[in-house]
Image: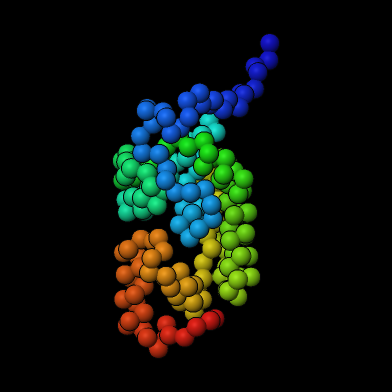
Length: 198
């Protein structure tokens, strides 16, 4: 008898309202609406995270501890994660939690359990070009016995324009050390970094 194909995981049915379930600790407080913070979260998940095939778990893995902590803080969740190792033995930080409502919200916005890396990069490049007139270029990294990786890269002039836009709001979520790097660079190169527009 032929082996039956693996069925899709069944969606967990909650019998107790989330607000009344005493087993739940540290539920997300970030509203499921577009905001600067939510855009930052979605960007992190599209690049460094994934949606589990069980249809309820959300996962973010990074070698940058501050990035994982910022991700959890933006969601309003407890700063809880595990520490593991990458394939090359480097330390990595791993945050995973169950949030069906957020999972479904992300699905509705185009994130999927199986990433379409090239499609995501092409979409991002198109949005940046339409909004700010920055072209960038696509770099393809070929890996043996693994899926290829794609990087969106910008030259110095376009990078300065993009960084000036990204860090224009001091209250927007970001990694502090990267913001400080940009501020230090901008102070040392005022003539290059000054001005508005591309």
